[in-house]
Image 1: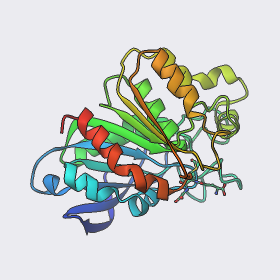
Image 2 (image 1 turned 120 degrees about the vertical axis):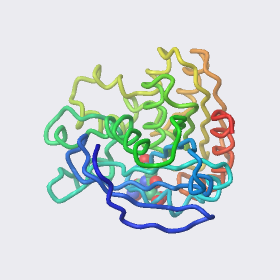
Image 3 (image 1 turned 180 degrees about the vertical axis):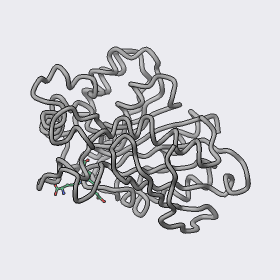
Length: 280
Ligand SMILES: N[C@@H](CCC(=O)N[C@@H](CSC=O)C(=O)NCC(=O)O)C(=O)O
């Protein structure tokens, strides 16, 4: 278990918003993540954890500073964990495009060079980070997960691949079918190779059809999102999930785009959804 180095701590809504760095055995790099500990945790109670996965170009700070989530985490008494979206560093492979390389790890374990050595974000967010969080902070083993865009893909995919680990999953404008849409096809070809049959293991729309554990799912999508429907296609996932017997709430939000303004507008309902699933 790696040691944590405290990077910063801010008091917000009576809790602590902390950034920590540590050596990751998954990525072989120094990783930074943020955790929000609500007042209830600071008072000595173990609290459930809500994991947030961000989208392309983000690190742990986008959601921390733009979504308004700490007020809700304080009110509901849940910890929030916000990882980076890729390994980083001068020695870590990168690409000049915003949708590949640093800031664009797609939450997969890369098998192709030059990415394979460091781009193991599936192992990081699904296994290493939860173990680290549960060892270092006053949290229970109750978990839930949500995310945005590339992080919405990550949240749905990680939840579906780990039955019973998460109480619920929700997403804002998720990339639900990366094997069939341009962002996903580009990233999966680079990270996983040209054999598209090997991509299915990370595609939520394909995973949901075969999933036995039916956790509740919530998806919000803005209809003024400039990446909708070309990159996102949430209705494809919703149809597959409902056919497989999942309960899915899907909201198409008139006038909303892909930004954190959209996320901030509906973050309350995502917290209420996860709180209900966590029995809060
Ligand atoms: N720079 C790109 C668009 C990048 C972008 O919109 N990133 C989104 C996530 S998109 C899917 O994963 C984001 O969350 N950005 C960070 C923010 O704080 O808004 C372009 O120009 O098209």
